[in-house]
Structures are given as C-alpha cells and as structure tokens.
Length: 79
Image (cartoon, rainbow, N blue to C red; front, side):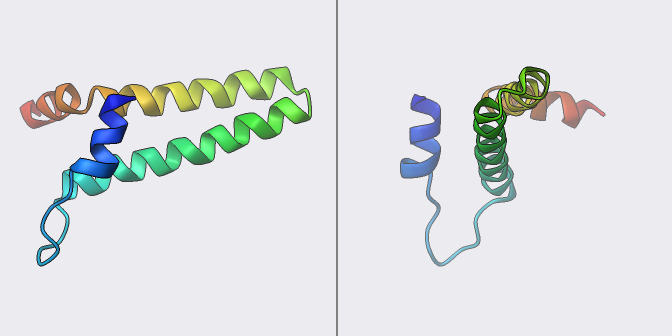
C-alpha cells in the first residue's frame, strides 16, 4: 500500500516535462487493476464464483507485475 501511495502522491515529475514512460506504464497498471476490482465486485453481487476467481486471478497478476516492476524491467532489458 505504501508503494501505491508513493506512486500517486509523491512520484511526480516537474510539470514542464512529460511524464516518463515507466511512470505512465505503472499508473496504467493501477487503472487496469481498478477496473479488475470493479469486475470482481460485480461477480460477487451476482454470486458467480467461477468468474470471480478468474477475475481475481487477473487482478492478482496485474498487481504482481506492479509490485515487482523493477525486477520485471531488469528481466526485459536482458532480452
């Protein structure tokens, strides 16, 4: 949770420059995670357990990518 707070409230480049692409990509992941949480909530209200599990797994994978961003970037740079 601290990492998300840092991302949203402290990790801000100067206004006169565009946001660096890594910040933009991480924030896109957070937005996608929010959409997934909305989908999970929707499946809970419809009591669709199988779909809830599927959408929860997608959310967890997105957040795993987000929380391990630096590790993932190092792996991609090796390719």
